[in-house]
Image (cartoon, rainbow, N blue to C red; front, side, top):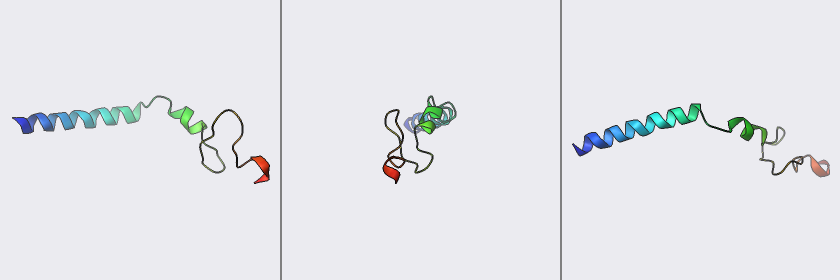
Length: 55
């Protein structure tokens, strides 16, 4: 009985994970937050540090 509960719980968690991966809120905003040149996350609204100082 306990094993059946654990199996159903794990199946439910897998289903929630698959649904969450498809419908992850803010995924487009996260893609915009990365620098297209170096791939690091930009903090704030200014340009990335790789574009500053001629690097």
